[in-house]
Amino acid sequence: MLYWFYRSGNLMNFFLRRRIRRAGIALLVMGILLSFLAGGRDPRRADAPGQLLGFGFALGVMALLSLPLRRARVRITRQLPEHATAGEPVRLTYHLTNLSRFTLHHAALVETPPDPRPSRAQFAIAREPGGEKRNAFDRVFAYHCWMWLCEIRILFDADESTRPLLLRRGASTTVTATIVPRRRGLIVLDDLRLLLPDPLGFYQRCLRTATPASTLAVLPARYPLPPFELPGSARFQAGGDAASRQTGPSGEFVALRDYQPGDPMRLIHWKSWARTGKPVVMELEDTFYPRHGLILDTFPEAGDEALFEAAVSVAASFVSAIDTHESLIDLMFISGREQVVTAGRGTGRAETLLEVLAGVESSPHPQFDSLRKLVLRHAEDLAGCLAVFAGWSPKRAELLARIHAAGISIAAIVVCEEEIPASVPGVRFVRRTQLGPDLMKLPPRF
Image 1 (cartoon, rainbow, N blue to C red):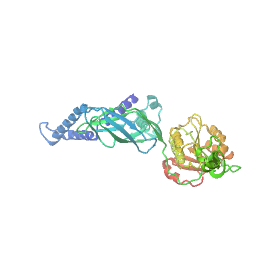
Image 2: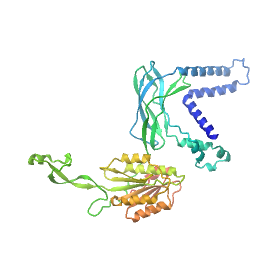
Image 3: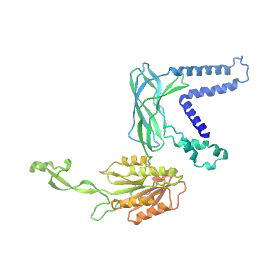
Image 4: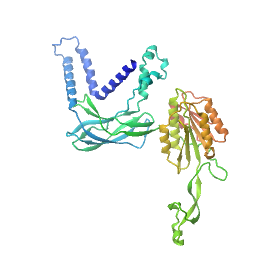
């Protein structure tokens, strides 16, 4: 019964908020106040409160009766940016064409997020953080739990288009609107509404358009970092090879040699070809770049989902800050299966890692041993590792110790709540609620 009541009330609230404008709310409040002022008086007296109440009622009825006359038929195409970032406004562009016989005026566009109402099963098993501290009435009726569930399920906040539309018959125009994604991941935009206010501005029609659905990739929130040097960045293997794989010849000139199938055109030495009559290429010294491992902890404990989201943001911040033109990054994590994604010079863009982080999900069961084996399989290629943990525990400390014992330089950043644990060698703690300031205090060397 509670679920049905809350679900119906939420639907009614959405319906009214989309169709009653601020002026309409002011008119309703004024009507209530005037009703109190005019109450108990002789209705035959033409006093000011009664006259104002009647005038406001007449305006409200006229506005409601004019709503069915507000019609529109438009063709809209939506243009999205390549990426968005959680918590930052993103501008969407719309191309509109008026297909009706009349001029479209004083209209606006707004995106509608997916229905945030939970299912009955989700409401039945949900536990609001801190809900055990509420009084018995709140715990029985679970209204705060319902509101919390709806709030965390809202994908984005949307504003109306920047300027009112004024479009003649058959004309086209371009308008923009802004949305603010609340979390990382993929957002499907499939409910674009056309708002048509009445002439008095009290109410508005909310028409769903036939605009094709679009998908927007939302990258994790990122924070500025101070200059830093990753662990093991100066380690070289025997023979002068950096602890990385070759990314191609781009060093100093060594010699000339005959052309071989597959040699790039940019290495052809044209003067020697003209002199000898056969293709000759330049041979360059092979250049190697350090390869770093970025380990993401996807095993948050129950109730630590916020720590996991913060850990993803920390990993994304390092991905954005590391110079991938001069190094390689192996992002390692377990999400259903072992995954290693590489980006850097000659292999891929850093945006590839950010897109992977945008969709990474936590694992229901800790698999620290599998994560350790995954890192050790790539030990020969890695100059060092940086681990990002969602919380601190003995199992995480054991993981660091066993990777370090295998001869890999490793450091860790641990996202925790307000209380920072005691200092641990090679581990830096940052508070979830003070993530930006704490990251800026990181030392240049881990």
